[in-house]
Length: 419
Image (cartoon, rainbow, N blue to C red):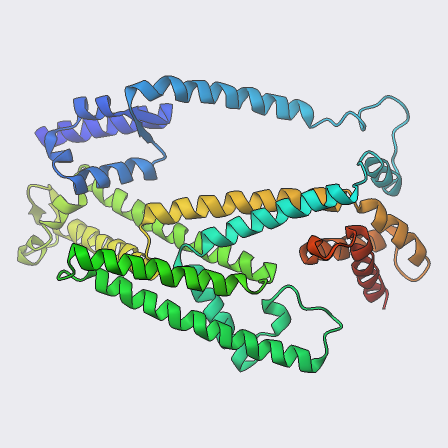
C-alpha cells in the first residue's frame, strides 16, 4: 500500500512539474519518503529523472524570478514578431514582383562598411571562433579529432587544404609538401601529449591514488593540456573541421542524454526508486524460477527487472566510457556544449553582417558576367558562395580591405560556374 502511495505522489509531482516547468525542494520533501533521498547518489538519480522530464527543481525563493523571466520572454517574443515586418518592405506604393528588383531593393537598405567596421566584425568572428575552439579543447573529443586528421594526412585520405584554413591557392607543390610534413610532426606531438594525459587520468582514478598524488597529477594534466592548446593555436584549423568537432560533441551529449533518459525510465518503472536501490535487487533475478515471478520489494516480474538490469548496465557503461574518454562528467560536457554553441552563434551572426554588407559587391561583379550562359540570379547565387568563402578565409591582420579580398573569391566562384 505504501509503495502505491509513493508512486501516486511521484506521478502527481511529475504532473505538477510538467505543467509549471518546475517543482520546489519543499514539494519534494513534503511528498516523497526519506528512502527516495537517503544518499547523495539517490538525490542525483532523482534530479536526473526530473531533468530528463524537463522539470527544474528550485528553491521557493526562485519561483518569482522564473515567473518574471517568463513574462519578459513572452514580451520579447511579441516584439520580435512585430519586428518581422521590415519597414522598408512595408512602405506604401506599387508592389515589386520582379525577384531581381526585390533583391536589389532589400540590398539597398543595408549600410556599407568602413575599414574600421570590417575589422570590428572580423574581430567578433575571430573571438567567437576562438571561444568555441577553446571550449572544445576542454574535452578530449576535439583533440582526438585533430589526431585523427594527422593520421588521414599521413595516408593521403585528407589533403592539407582540408585541415588548415590559411593555405593560399598560389602556394606551390614544394611549399605544400613542407607544410604537410611540418603539420604531421606537430600533430604527432599533440598525440604524444594526449596519450600522457590519458595515462594521468587513469592513474588518478585508481583506488590507491592518494590526495597528494592527485594534486600532483592535476598539475601535470593542466600543464600538458596547456602545451596541447599552444600547439593547436600555432595553426588555423579549417572551419569544416571545427564544425565536425561540434557535431561529435553534440552526438556525445545526445548519447549521454539518451542514457540518462533510460535510467530515468528504469526508476519510474521501479516506482521511482533510485538506481542504487534497484541494483541491490539484481542478484534476485537469477534466484527466481519463472519469468512471471514477482521480485520483492520492487513488485516487478523477473523478466521486467531483467530488462531494467540490461538497460541500467548499458546506460551506466556508456556514461562511464564517456567520462573516461573525455575526462568530464555528463554535466560538465553539457555545459561545454552550451559554451561552444553560444560562441558559434556569435561568430555566425558576425559573419552574416559581413556578408550582408557586401551583397552589393556581388551584384556589381555578377553584372559583368551576364549573357555568358547563366541567369543573373544564378550568377548572384554563385557570387554569394564565393563571398561566404571569403568571409571564412579573411584575415584582417594583413591590413587590406575585405572588399578587395572578397572580389577575387567572388570572381573565382562565378567564372568556375560559367566554365
